[in-house]
Image (cartoon, rainbow over all chains, first blue to last red; front, side, top):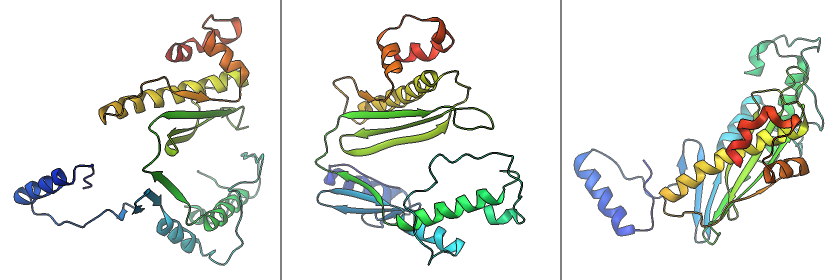
Length: 93
Length: 147
């Protein structure tokens, strides 16, 4: 559960109220939730998914490969007419 | 995808290479950003040679912060690029309406209409003039969302 707002007294009261009724643990300021990394500073919040992306890249095993600056070639066109079927479908999933 | 081809796999690998170069990219939400919505949209027509459906793309900012974005294939086949763009405008408008409701729930109601930016003169003309012409009659319902 994330509690947010600009009323720090209110947040504290809500947390105490919830603690009285449920068994729960305060994990402190938000830093990681569902694969989303949250960095907070005085000028705002920065959200990233570096760990998720790193795990994805390591799973494919291309950690040392060359970096591409765009995700796809320009004007790329996918069709069903391509002949060479992929031998191992599981590679794709 | 039922029967991936080798070219598809090569493209997936390219995406992985791209992700590797952007590992530490993220979204910054500044405390000093204004709370005014603005949106950009575009459409690609006809994008896919297999089913000839176009693609909608939009991104909506609250001040400097990216709030909502979407790249999605349209459900119907568009008969002109203007029609594809117009459907993209309709998709963006519904998202903006939803954000308006959400923001007013959070007590940051938008006091003025939201600016929408696009690169298609035809769409701007239709949006300004809700008289239906022969060529756009069939997209009337989408027009009614916007007008």
